[in-house]
Image (cartoon, rainbow, N blue to C red; front, side, top):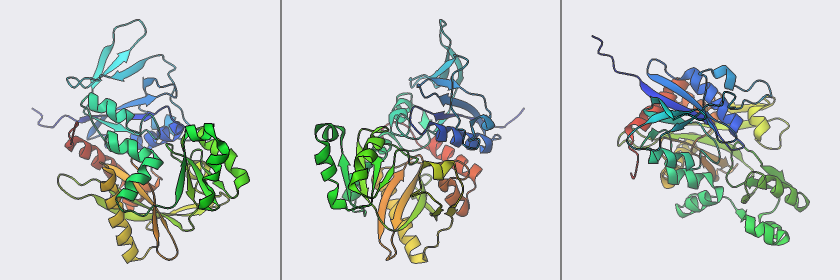
Length: 373
């Protein structure tokens, strides 16, 4: 008689309705290829750009970026799935047109790999809380607040963390008086960076060197989000630190630091530089930062993680100036997670390889209860 324990069944959820759909698929390709199959049974669930949940083949190659061709979740078979929103059952239900929903399998934990709105922003986390399903990453509040760069900065300022100068332009302000909205940017001095408030992977971001470029940059950002954040350009290095939740009562852990060193002909570390063109791009890990400043950045990264109420994982991004001044740029609660992304890279340098990192995150999720905590 076998005494082996049944494997944990993990639903890997990716794709989604945001502009980061393809990057989420690429992340799933990396995870599906690396997850410990001796320990976990995997159920791949893709969410199409239209919001349909689809049971996907367990095939990493179909989800990888091929040159400049981006992957996409489609529902060619016309079969959708849902996670039953009930605390009493953790079933995945298959929906066939004109038929009664059928239970396919139950899951023990969900590994969300969604970036941006409708996944990283607390919406999926709320569904999983309703279903009493354990999941990797931060809960509803931290996910929602850290997705919104405006709200994020308010939290960090309240916690005494260093935040650079910025201006927020809401949809109402823009529609009421564009000239007044653009005039509010003047105290920042150029260049500035114009960003959608609730998007990631550098989608919709522009570097603006003068006022005559500002309106077009705001309109571009508004294609991704009607609320726009405009930040003062800070001359400094971009240094990033990974944070993992501690097991049990242990304190959060900070990784070695990584740095975006070169971006070739790109004005900044934009979507194309990140995902479609390796020319001139180098992610250095560990970053060439003094031991004293490394310790300071790690300590402040954990402080930011705690101030935000993060769980599971986060990547904390800093601007580090020549005189050692630090400005907290942002926290990503579901950071880029392809095998070559910065978050896995800094943990690999810290002694935790990609497969073990995935295992650590799943086990953290299994330890943590749902609901108020």
